[in-house]
Length: 55
Image (cartoon, rainbow, N blue to C red; front, side):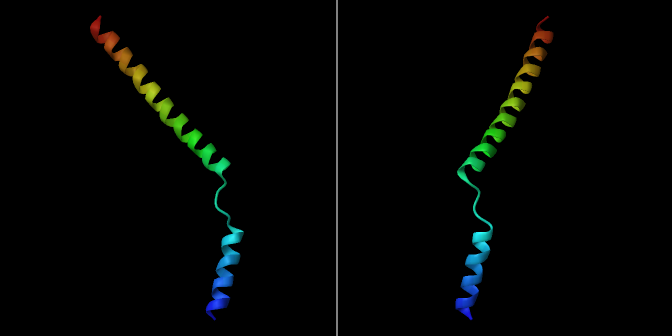
């Protein structure tokens, strides 16, 4: 019974392979891009705010 169960688990895990390094790299790139864009927009709005308050 336990042997059958472990074999079944192996089959299931082979059906759903772990994400490839390329996939992980791609997701990290998207994540960094989103964070960078958010940071850039925040920086831009901050500089505009400082510029308008100084004048």
